[in-house]
Length: 139
Image (cartoon, rainbow, N blue to C red; front, side, top):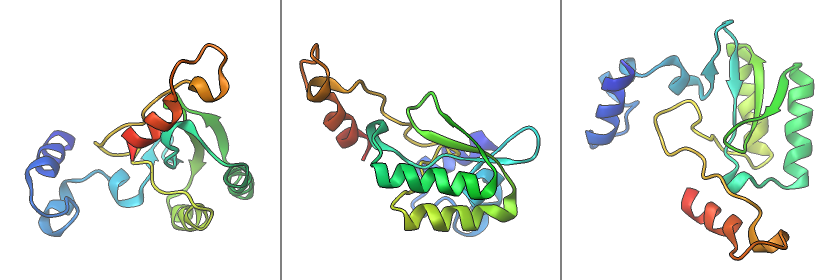
C-alpha cells in the first residue's frame, strides 16, 4: 500500500487524501503522526534547518510534559515526541500549531528534513551561511 500511495501521490492531479485514494494511505497520513510498534504515535513537527526559537522550544517542552511524552532530537535535526495515543493527537497538533509549528511530514512519503551545520553565522570554520540555505531548500 505505501508504494501504491506514493505513486498516486506523485501522479494524481488531486490531493492524495481526496476521494477513493484516501483508503490507500497509511493511518499515519490521516493523523499526522507515526505509528510506533507499541501502538502509540510519535509527533515530529517541521523544523527547517533544525532551527527553533526559544518560545517554540518552551511550547514543545510544555506540550510533551502535559501529555507525559518521551522527547528526543531525531536524526533529521528535529524534535520528536513519542508515546502519544491517537485520541491525543488532535489536541497535541492544535497546541503545536498555536505555537507556530507545522507538520513535518515525518510520517509521509515527502521531502525529508534538510540537515545542516550552523555555518558561517556561528562557526569560526564556517565558509557559507548553510543554515539559511537549508531553510530555503526545505521550504
